[in-house]
Amino acid sequence: MFLTSSDARRFGQWEDVPWWEFVRAEGKSPDYRAIVAKFLTRGLVAVKEEVASTRTVGNMGQAFLLSAVGLGRDGDAAIARMLNAPTNEAWIDPWTAFLRARGVRFVLGRTVEGFELSGGRVSAARSVDAKGGGHRIEADWFVCAVPPDRAVRLWTPELLRRAPALEGVGRLRTDWMNGVQFYLRESPRGLGELLSFMDSPWQLTAVLQSAIWDRDFKADYGDGSVADCLSLDVSDWDTPGVLYGKPAKRCSPGEVVAECWAQMKAHLEDTGASVLPDAILHSWFVDPAIVWNAATGGNTNDEPLTVNTIGSWRDRPEARTGVPNLFLAGDYLRTHTDLATMESANESARAAVAALLDAASSPSAPPPVWPLYQPPQLDALKRLDAARFARGLPHVLDL
Image (cartoon, rainbow, N blue to C red; front, side):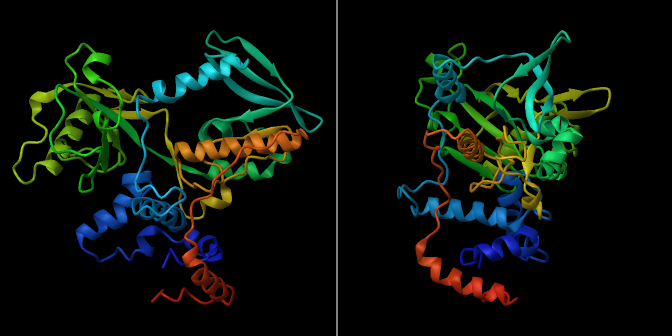
């Protein structure tokens, strides 16, 4: 039904329908709810299935499905694609080196606190350093590329009067999806590169790094005794775990690690086979954005993830703002990718550059963007649905 829904119905109906309701999860079996309702939302995008936008989850599910069966622009069948080395080595370090060579200057250790406007344009950005010293950053053009929970702190009343579409950013919701890395003395046998622990209370997913990194792990990293890394995402920080009966938000770092290890073992070893023997665990590392406070018995998270709840598309801004020399970039913007991912962030940055080049009347060509692949074989059915939607009729398969 979703695959053959027109864009008009996706934005006009499915955007405001929770995924839980769309897949008729109420009253279904526990396995159906765990796989179809919960995993496609909490396990992959951290948003609760009762409030997740069907349009976003459907778009994501369609992209995964078409990619898995090799239907796409390059015909390469793969559910997901990973970097072939640690993120810094494969991407960040080469990219920053390239930018420095082109004259880009990175200033670290400062916090941007706001924008100054003059004549309807941004004249400067204000920042403060670690010692409390203030700085003015003057420029012709500004790109604000910070997460929405940080961006809203920069919106002054004058800025919002000039760019009222930015008011919706404050209504966007975030949730937690942070990682734990397990360093192993040997590679587990029988595991693929992507692991989905669909029945785990914390909706764990993982990547076995040796399966995708083009590296000699023992020779290149650590003290030579670590052979592999199991990199884990914890997508549900609110559901009680199996060891301590507490959600991850109320667990100390050691408890988070013990819970994750136990939940993985429960999933992998339910037939009696030993897949993750305790002896292979060398050490672990919890995302430093998660900070434990023993006094309050809880965690804080410095890097929450934007989640696409029902109706949130209307609150998401475009890269171009109402201020002619201010542009936005970030995975919370309106993009074809439509998900808090690296791809969406990249696409939004391209949109910001395109808008900036246009505003500057630059002769340079804008960077390309690639909409998600839509099978042309379904176009006729989508046109039929668009006509039905325009007449107020439900989808022909909506029984």
